[in-house]
Length: 428
Ligand code: XMP
Image (tube, rainbow, N blue to C red; front, side, top):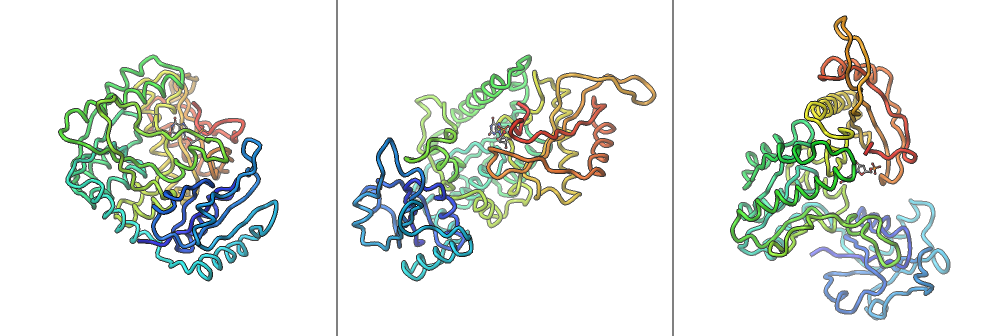
């Protein structure tokens, strides 16, 4: 069992940075609220030291918060840091790393045993212990998190896991096929592939409002998943790809929620499962490292972020099948050319959108009346703000040529130069 260092949230906005820094030094670290109880603390194995991380949000509802007595009485080494009083983190990141290094290794004597292989070994044992000989269900979208959960569970419990892949018709080109190839064939998982394309597109037909599109998508997903779950006998557990930022962003005692933690909620009462969430202590880069170690394909593990409603919010306005294909094909060309230009891992998110209006052009010596493709390529740290990737002109010219010649229904290509704010990353 790995050693751990606790970061106690006393209103710092560097809790995540400090925990990540400790992990990068090879020691497991997690963030806890200031009022951690004696029982909760006792339930955490191998705690070697505690950092009381004070900061600007220390006054909550008019009261300056402090760590609980259980923390002070624990007898564990404590490092107290605050921006108002007492020792502070050095603003120089190399010096801050040294402060952390001295505390965790010299004072706490923690062992640097936090790595992916140990994590996988521990989780395999923990999953087996939690699940026993029972059946587990997983909604496998093929995104990074659900794919890594699937691979980890297959390693731990093999065919006690059933993966349900719902193809709602809004996935990128080649994605449903890759899920079948990797999980159904290579990893020989119990994979239920649900072709729900018609069902989703029929429900979405004529719906132009972005939020309404999202709502229909989410609800229909739950209905399809529910139907599949009812067909399976004796499932007691539901696995989910919840990761640590999902939990942190759900809000702490000193900072309000950034977003609510979205999971497969909304299932009916008679279909409630116990959750299996083996990645809920990992940051995204650690999830990726885990996927690598489990042998998943590189492009699956290093995939750029993709919105839950998929290409549906990039086929602007009311979705039609022909325009959706234009989004999918232009997106595939964009990804191919980005990879060829060495930009695939460098640009945070890039995609195409196709609006529901047409313009006049000339194709094969005849008048054409077709849609434009909009190219978007942005960089960001946290998706709250984003800047534009300045794409080379030659690349833009090549994309324009290919999209107007290879994608049915397209006669113009536009490059969106709007940062966030004022635009959002997606168009809907
Ligand atoms: P915006 O468009 O709000 O997007 O600047 C920020 C990031 O979130 C993704 N996004 C979504 N992800 N469900 C998701 O899971 C959604 O409905 C959704 N809408 C936007 C977007 O791709 C970007 O990475």
